[in-house]
Image (cartoon, rainbow, N blue to C red; front, side, top):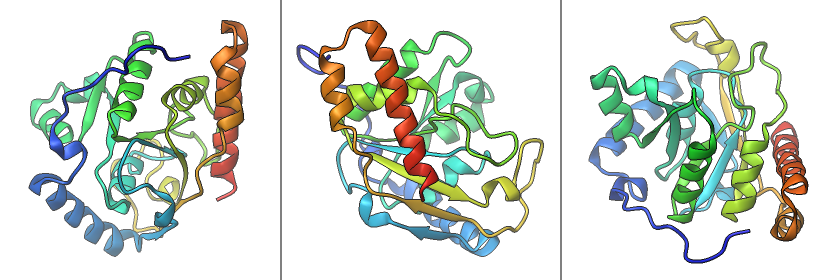
Length: 224
């Protein structure tokens, strides 16, 4: 599946340890979310303290990325569409909080490769297997891209369930309502069998294995 030396990214230290700016944002968001949403966090013991890890979460609201960042005690990276960086002050802000720009409108191969390289470099990356926000609050099917990243990166996949963010800020909303929100992290998803099969699989079979991995991740999220 992977051969030869793994690519090495030259990343700022803030991807591994909170710098003053990231920590300041982390403290402010945690306090704000606890007051506004009565934020509750469960299962932090399942999240590795160091090394590459996929934080695989359901996606119901624009609130989800900052909620996850505030819940964890280590920095995380996010894959964000490049258009979000066009307004330079906002682009600078999210880049300082470890958002990585991607051309969402184009083929996804570059985005998948970027995610894998970040994970191989020891970064924790937030992924939303559903690919986009739910329109109605229900879990959607996972996309094969998340499964591909999970199979090729060979890092722990931590299922993550956010409850309440859809009610607080669904599609079309511009300001969150004070609704209780909880985030639960689960045990790493068991993928060793699919990873072993993917090592020798032809392309057609590999695609089905990617979907199977994504389905298993979504099932783990649903069980939280």
